[in-house]
Image (cartoon, rainbow, N blue to C red; front, side):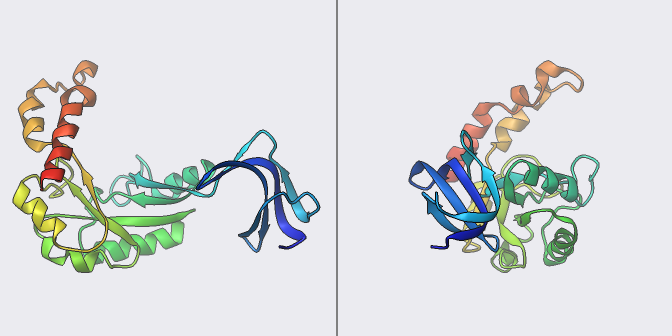
Length: 223
């Protein structure tokens, strides 16, 4: 254990896999070298963390950064910079952009852009569609891809797979993570007349209610 560190975070409450621990954290070359009572250690820079919580870099597995298509809503540069300021060191981005991220060319374009402009680490979901289901086992291995995203309720473009046989085909298609947007499309369509544009009392929480999510999740388990 080094006696001198580049960075020493002293006296904070560290959030560790087994719980909260009052400890110091010693860092060398950007890597944690020691966690514990480091009272005799010195450092080039010391942060007094008494009364504060010290966490590892957090990961947000569900973000919507609207590149390509709608960067005015949220772009990769602005979204990842906000993530860093909030303590997140990695985010996983959804594929329902314009166009949707559903093939190797779109993945490559977006990953190249991510490497140029993102402020934090970033993974990309490839969107599962009926058309690309046979190719998902290959697409999920493309550079930068963190998993497959399937929308069981209405979404952008052709990003919707709502019937059980098609959902089962997606689940059998690859070997890595699949993330599901679990809304029941049939209930959504049944309730669609309830939505009135400009009426806040018919908004998302009313039309696309908790029962839609429950039924969608149940369908995933059944499949």
